[in-house]
Length: 148
Length: 256
Image (cartoon, rainbow over all chains, first blue to last red; front, side, top):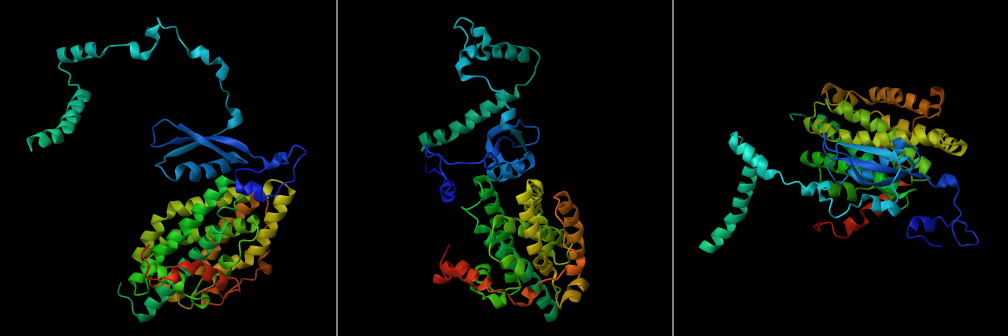
């Protein structure tokens, strides 16, 4: 059986009766899940896997595979076998009945109350200022065009 | 820089030696691209190769500012006798154990040399040494991790790494072939000397090899392979240079 990886084909491994390559257990390295942190304090985000014989070598591999084309502060590697995952067959446990929208974060409208509180207490809404500025920046070139 | 003629000559020879080592080992290591033992290592080893060539280019640019030809011309048009690299870096890649051990021995010498150069009186070189500190550190981390893993993994890997060490050690001692200009470089506060570097190098690699259950050859058996720094090379360098510069020489004026 030929592989999509040319280096596997070049190995010219002996094959079983079913045509599959015979690989000793030792030739199949374990995989490690790689978590990437962009800046110190940010959360680590899962970015993929590397093959490795031990955790230290996994970090060495992960540095080049996942760290070389983006800003990186820190990497974690975790043996894939250490991960306990939920079953996709059980995906229905995450579903909720339509009338229980209060369970979803998007169901909470509270900004009007927050703004009212801010106005009453003279607190400046910096987010609002930024939003207004952004809108203004976006509108400006349009104005120019119409003026011309 | 207000150096006299001999001092300039000393500086140039020193720069050529460092950059040529990096270019040649970089090119040799790049011969593993596409053939690495697994794709992650293929990427890592290729990046390391590329880093070394980049560092060499930077040093050639310093040489250019001292009146030498431009970096590409220096790299791709000289013949073997003009190269000041040691024999360790020019040998063919062999098996992966050989390439890894060569890289381990070379990277440690390079890291210590760069540490020493960070305080060098030759300012552009001191800046360069600081700039590439992180790159060089990763190169030694990579080498240490592999040597530790394979030195202890199983009987075969241990035997192969020990053989690789025995085969490369005297060649690696050739890195420290002293220059006739050593005193000048020392007086100018540019570099304290190859003997100092070799001493620090032995100090650095000894505990790492012990952790990897590998044995350094007895000092009575050390036979440094010298000659490279004077332009004497093995039969392997010239064909490599021909291949490396083949495309460049087709049209040296081409814009890349």
